[in-house]
Image (cartoon, rainbow, N blue to C red; front, side):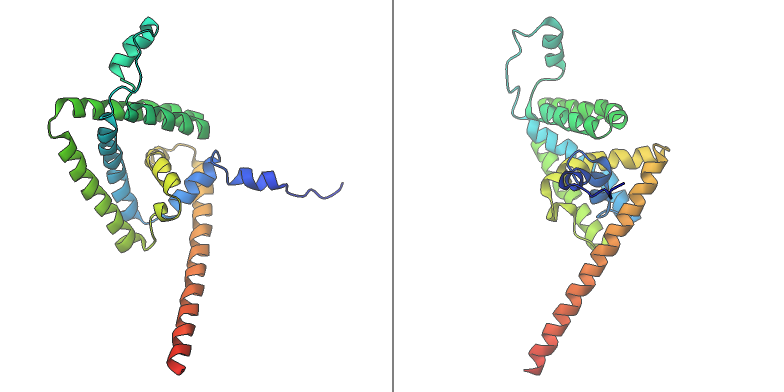
Length: 220
């Protein structure tokens, strides 16, 4: 048989937006320290919740008066504001990545958006609270990266991926702790270790180049 050669589309698919292992490994490689992971498990839900409060301020983005009875009643419970619609889009993406995990976590994410909507509607200080939560939670995460992880957050490389994957990363950390898909967890650990080794090698090379340049400058 003739040797099989990898096709360009194969490599693209292996690192595509719908490749679960690639997406999780990319995010997890920046969140490998236990303390930093703990900080993110606490702060990411708070950041998401407070962001959904801001998003809820758009109010319903379209009218559902002529919708069928069931949809009309549903829209009263979950008004189609920017927060709830965004969480619905997130959940569709998460389900595409992993149907079981996506369906398990969808009620939690939609429920979080509903709670943020209710909080915004019933609290006069909702904006103040959400702003304070954002400042404290983001600050804690940057401390986690700078002091404990020693590596910049994923958002410095891919902002969109970091914002979309962060909630799913938290969900998977909980699911893995409960014994969900242990083989996937083992594969991810190997991918993360390889990525960290590669990053450390790049950093060492950059440090050597910088040191060499300083030495030449001092010699001149």
